[in-house]
Image (cartoon, rainbow, N blue to C red; front, top):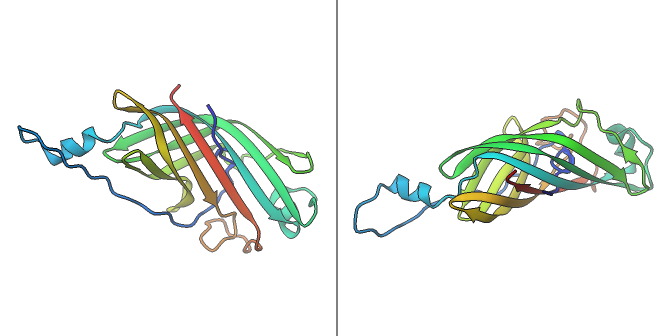
Length: 208
């Protein structure tokens, strides 16, 4: 399976990051039946099941101004902007209650390389191997969740359930945007990042 998650960002790499808020939705359903059915049962029956085990893959794209490269990446800058692309794979466990879900992702392998071809080795202390999934919401086939959430913050991902078999989701895809440590909403206490610093991710998960 494959996705873009930059670790953490996931999946892809995920920095300990925080992100801007994303739109949330609510799931509702109306059904006509000869026999009365409890509203909660109707809503639940129409929501795909995402609970359980998943495999994920992800990729991420980080742009870092020269003034921040050594501090954030531990290398010399490659021009005014250093480009870094990362790929990662791992597993995910989700728990679901109606149209909401939470869980945790675990990174099993990752590879990061600068635009100049330099391979980066990112320490787990800075880029954790395990990240929470928070504020998961299913609206029809659309999904929203925060990846790497810390103190209510995280990298918002929006996407869709690609396939459902007998009520259970079997594949989902999402993209996200993370703000690196130092942003006003970031829980990581660092100086604000300069303009032009960004981290974009994409994420794909499938059933094992």
